[in-house]
Length: 74
Image (tube, rainbow, N blue to C red; front, side, top):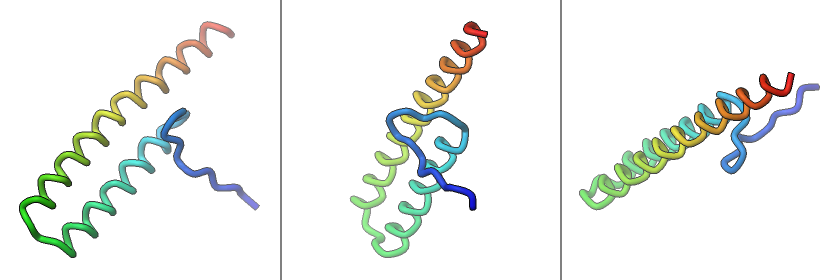
């Protein structure tokens, strides 16, 4: 039986962490925007999208740094 690991926010290790967080954010935004249509909600979703994009850039940097350090140790 395969174990499923939830995406890690603090220590992203793989592409699947970044992809998982992005998909969770997109689904959350889609549900919220389907329920509420106000301008304030749309602005909040833009802020959430910006935060997820910044986190994704940071996470990719962390993953690449970890991979580079692992290669140097070999």
